[in-house]
Amino acid sequence: MKTTELFGKKTVFSLEIFPPRETMGENVIYETLDALHDVKADFISVTYGKNSGTDGCRTVKIASDIKHRYGVESIAHIPCIGATKEKMIRILDALKENEIDNILALRGDMPEGEAQQGDFLHADELISFIRSRYDFNILAACYPEGHPENPSYDNDIEHLKRKVDCGANHLITQLFLDNTHFYRFMYKAGRRGINVPVEAGIMPVTNKRQIERMVKMCGVELPGKFIKILDKYGDNERALKDAGIAYAVDQITDLMANDVDGIHLYTMNDPYVAHKIYEAVCNLI
Ligand code: FAD
Image (cartoon, rainbow, N blue to C red; front, top):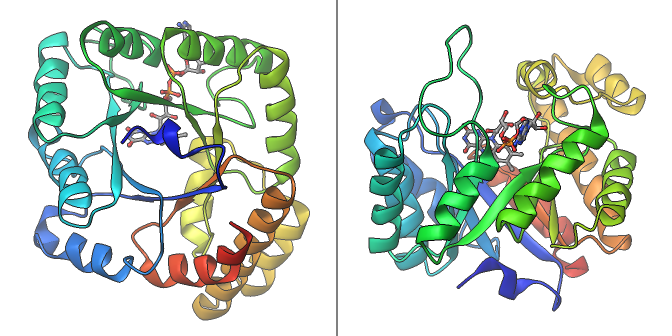
């Protein structure tokens, strides 16, 4: 099923997981998925990164198992940076063979210090490439605080419009910790004629090192309210977990009250956190 069919009836609630390190064994991801079963997710997306295997085979397999073994719709993330068209065709053919309907088409992060190689410079080129050859439903990433490489917010919105015009028809945001960024983004995107459903990406912050890395990598603003939580509970793992869950629930409640299209929860492969959040908001969905 194409994810676009889910919108308009209720608030979409989705999860994101990542392929664990291969040294952790094949079963780890299935233990995570078993534990996530009670969270009634509309779909689960699987990231693509250093643990995705050759031609993304582990991402493809996990996305396929989510759909066929667990009966939940899935999305495969596919970054294109450094890839040739031939490699992309191998990955896309594998997804098609596994009856995956949805792809989150991404550029991926630029490898530091390396010159760009491969056939794709930006996500819009991958989206056009997929659209011209396949019938996948295509999603794209968006950035409520702007993409960190682009100094112009409005220009970043222009590039997003291009991704939508090339064929992306469902967007998922980067994490943000202050909902006002999301509302400003929705206003600007709407004014630019971007009218596809947008899911708000929510990351429950339960670990101080993790958020420090994210802030550096994604340029996400830490609101004063959040800094106070980090200052007080940053060195107390259990307290920070509770505070991070409460903070995410508060963000989601506000987004739902403001008619968000969907919530995409970055689970960090932690079913306990996903459960706690789902329990707290499931009656709002
Ligand atoms: P693009 O849309 O190509 O944008 C990148 C930059 O280039 C922006 O600054 C934009 O303004 C600019 N730009 C865009 N188009 C053009 C153009 N035509 N000409 C000039 N400039 C342009 N990464 C992974 O490696 N694996 C994952 O699984 C993954 N999942 C993600 C899931 C979500 C929901 C999000 C938000 C991000 C994810 N990422 C993932 C990270 C993503 O790859 C990075 O944020 C990357 O830096 C940008 O990817 P993009 O697809 O948004 O790129």
